Each structure stands twice: as structure tokens, then as C-alpha cells.
Image (cartoon, rainbow, N blue to C red):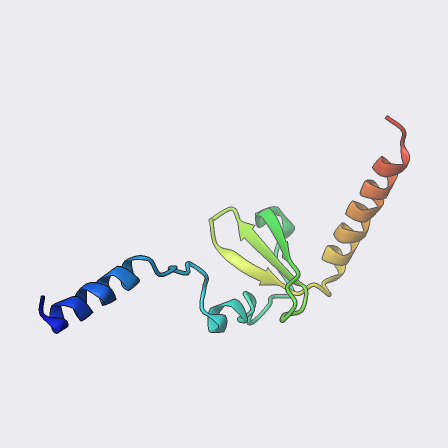
Length: 99
């Protein structure tokens, strides 16, 4: 058997059994979703809110609007602060009530 053929077969065998990673590259993992935020947006246009808290980025609030657009809302917005405060109070209240 030819030495080159043996080397190619060995490389193919090793290549078949190597682990393939499906993780994102580090540069994509470390990017923040929100690069800019809006301060004013009509609340009636919001369909859904998502909250992201990642180690490399500040607290991020992403709103999906009724027209399917996504925008980042400034977490310091007054109505959003009140919304979060009410939601936390509701959660605390539900935990205190015995079932």
C-alpha cells in the first residue's frame, strides 16, 4: 500500500471523528443586541417586551411592535420603570399568598 494513500486515509478517518462545534464565534456572543435606544414610543404600539441581561451588556429592553418591527427601549424611561416596579410587586404578592 502506498504511503501517501495510507496518510490520506488516516487524515480522512481523523476528520470524520472530530467534534464539530455549533457555538457562535466569540465576536458574535459578546455583541450587545441594543446599540441604540428610543426614549419615546407609544405604548399602544407594543405587542411584546423582552428583557435581556447579559454579562457584557447593560440591561436591555426589546419591544416587538404590532407592525413586527423590533426596537430597543431605554430602560430608564419613566413608564417602563413603573411597569417593571408593578410587575415585581405582583410577583412578590403572588409568592406571599399561600396556595
